[in-house]
Each structure stands twice: as C-alpha cells, then as structure tokens.
Length: 300
Ligand code: NDP
Image (cartoon, rainbow, N blue to C red; front, side, top):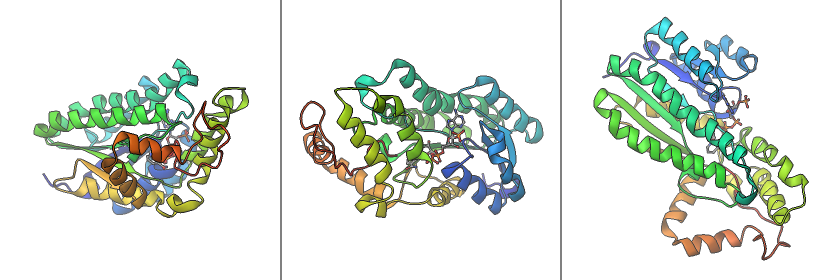
C-alpha cells in the first residue's frame, strides 16, 4: 500500500550523532513526520529547527521505550516506520569481556531493538502497514578479532530480522536490514572508549588490545579501507530508499568497504579468512610484537 510521505510517521533511535542524526535530517527534509530520539534529549534539540519532533528514548530502559511509542501513537495512531539505529561496540578480547559488559552490549544492540519492535507492531498490524529498518553491519556477516561482543550482537540482529521478515510480511509489514561498512561517525570513539579499562591493566592480551584500539581509530582515517568508507548520509540515503521501495530488499550493504569485505569473506574458507586476519593483527600468545594492525578491527 502506497502512503503519502507527509503522513508517514518515523521513529528513529540514537539521533544524537552519526547515522541516526543524518537519517533524521534527511527524512525530515523529505517531508516525513520524524520523531528523532536520544537518551539525552538535549543532544537533539537542534533537530527541531529542521522539523523533527524530539523525544527522550533510552533503548535500555523499558519505561522510556513505552512512553515514546505511546506519545507517538496518541498523536498519530501508530508508528509507520521504525528505524532501530542506536548501537555501539563493546570491544576487546573475548576472555576479558565481563559478563556485565556482554549483557550491556546485548541490552542496547539486541534487546532494545526487540522491545521496540514489540511495542510498534500492534499499531502497524492494525493499519496493515509498517516498515522496520534494523541497523546491522557488515559485521553482522563477518567477524574481526577484538569485536566478539559487537559481532555477536549484530549476528543476532540478522537472525531476528530474517525470522521477523517472514512472520510479519502477511500483515503488510516489511523488515529490512541495513549493513554499513566503515562510516565516519562517533562509532570508533565509543568503541575505543569501551576498552579503557582493558587497555589500562596488565594482560596476556595487552599488545593485541592496543592493536585493536589503534586499528579501530586508524581504519577510518588511513589506509585502503578508509578510502572505501562513507559518511552517515550515505547510509541515510539507503534507508530512505528502503522505506520508499515497494518491495524492499531483505538487506542492503552500504559502502564499498562493506561490499568488498562481504564478498571477500563469502569467497574465503574459514582458514583463509583467519590467515588474512593474522596478517592484520598481532596474535595473542603468538606474535605479540606485531603492532602495526591496519584492518577494520571492532569496526562496523
Ligand atoms: P554513533 O556513535 O555516532 O551513534 C550511535 C548512537 O547510538 C548515538 O546517538 C548514541 O547516543 C546512541 N545510543 C547508544 N546507546 C544508546 C541507548 N542505550 N539508548 C539510545 N541511544 C543510544 O555511531 P553510528 O552512527 O555509526 O552508529 C549507528 C548504528 O550504525 C549502530 O547500530 C552501529 O552499530 C551501526 N553501524 C555503524 C558503522 C560505522 O562504521 N560507523 C558500521 C556498521 C554499523 P549517545 O550520544 O547517547 O551515546
């Protein structure tokens, strides 16, 4: 069913920076009724000037998610488009990830996404219309060392979305995965920030953690992969395309970095992929001295 753009009500999470902010700006400019949200609502006040409605929404807080959806439903009946964008990377070696950090990763990147989907679906089903866009990553289909928690969360989003796409199609609801590669946003700073404690203490993974942190910063700035990256609006443009397409694809890889690395991963057997990674990262317990890693660790 085609809908007029101005009557389409869009809820976006994580609009304080990066892809969420760019998507709010682009969709508001295109005439959608946009609800831009962030856990610190003051960080998105300026989006009101371009026509966005703004709401507080922390995807780890059930009450805040319920209140946001209730506010929109009271004003418009239902959310037409949900863009689950909020997310970050808890980076570092798997052994050293505390259960608490792993849970925190899943609370934001997986459970928040699932809960918001649950909250908007009854309204979408009543209208017989809805679009759910889940920000996954190329890292939902390939894994870099030092990104175990993040990749696990994005693989989970891929599986949930694949099941959901089948389950809600008959109600007139499309589910789309967006899989960006390297996008220049606040992502790398948050990823390196999540490693502060791990980097400060002595560890058998010391050199490895240093290399992961360095690569996470540098991959967006230098080297071949940075040239294949993109800006937040490159993702926003694909999201706009996906929500307007009559028959959207199940998944959209965004940027050359995602397309190249996903193709490379699909062609390589596991042993060849591992050998590729060994050329990029110092291997803990083996060659701790190699510290010039340049591959997209913990990225995307
Ligand atoms: P940014 O760090 O710029 O933006 C992340 C956003 O998520 C921020 O607005 C942040 O808000 C928000 N957020 C984090 N935790 C919560 C929470 N509990 N509740 C609500 N909002 C929260 O990174 P990106 O724009 O790059 O990331 C957006 C999405 O894109 C993520 O899901 C990420 O995994 C994905 N992605 C990014 C890639 C990249 O290379 N940049 C590549 C592939 C995927 P706050 O300011 O409050 O922290």
